[in-house]
Length: 417
Image (cartoon, rainbow, N blue to C red; front, side):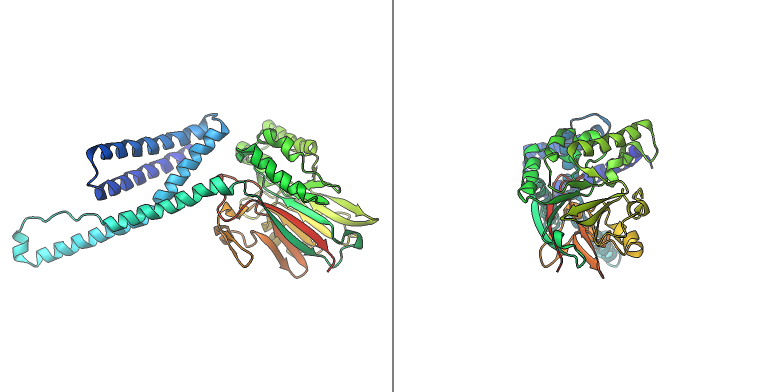
C-alpha cells in the first residue's frame, strides 16, 4: 500500500473517531451554555481538522524540523487519548443497545405498552463518558510529561563486565557506550551538549557508539556534529552503523547515486568526528603490551531489518585474541548468529530497541511493550560464558520523549573476576 493511500485511510479513520467522540461528549454536557457549545465545537474541529491537514504538510512539504515534530506529536497525543477513551464510549453504546432491545421485547409482550407512545430516548451514561475523558487524559498528560521531562534526562548506568580471560593490563579499565543518537529528532542543543558533558565527566578509557546517528539522511547530523565530536577517549572511540544510517528509509532498498553519496557522507562524518567506524572489521586494542579485540559489523537484524553485517569478515585473524568485544546495532543479531556460530565473542554491545521509549526500569524489574518483540531489549544478558548489553539509546525517534525508559549513557568496568 502506498504511503499516500495509507495516510488517507488513517486520516479518514481519525475523522470518524473525532465525530464519534464529539457527539458523545456533547450528548453528556447538554447543560452547557449556547456560547460554550459554539466555542467547544469550533475549537474541536479547528484543532482536529487542522492537525490532519498538518500531518500531510509535515510529510510532503519541506517544513522546519521543529514545526514538523510539533504537528506530528500533537496529532499522536490527541489520537492516542481518543483511542483510550473509545472503549468507554463503546461500552456505553452497548449498554444503550441492550436496554433498547430489552424494552422492545417487553413492549411486544405487553399489549398496553405496545399501544403506548414511544418513550424517551435512552441517554448516554454521564459516568462512562466522563470516565473515558479521564482515562484519555492519562496518556495525554504522561506522554506530554515525557516530552518535557524525559527526552533529555540522561541517566548514567554502571555495569561491571566480568571477563575471566581478560588480560591483566585491562583489569579495571572503563568503557562507555552510547547508542541511537537519532540527531534528526533533536530540538534542544543545550540539552544534547549536557548529555555529552555528562559522558565526558566519566573519563572513560574508550567509547563505543552502536549505531543510528541519524533518522534518514546524513545531513541531519550537521547541526550536532561539533557536539558529538567532543566525545573523546585515550584508547579511542569506535562506532558501527545502525539500520537508519544507510538511507534505506528515504531512498529505498536500491543503490541510487544519491543513496550511495549519502552513505559516503555518513562514513566521512564518522571520520570527521574522530570515530573509528568499523564496517565488518576489527581492531586490536593494546594496553601494556597485551591485546583484546574490538569487532564491529554493519547492521544485521532479524525479520525485516537489513543484514549488511558479515561476521566472517570481521572475525578474520582474531583467533589469538583472548577477549573479543562486538559492536552490533541490533540485539537480535546476538541470538540469531552470534550465539550459534561465534562462541568466542565474549560480549556484544547493541542498541536499536530504545526500550520503546516507554515502560518501567527499576533495579528489581523492568517492563516495556518492546519486550514482546525483542527477547533482549535493555540491560545485561548472559548465556553460558557469552554476554550481551543492550543500551536503550541516547536520542529518540517518532515520539520526542521518554516515559520511564530514560536516555542512557552506560559505563562499564572490565574485570577479571
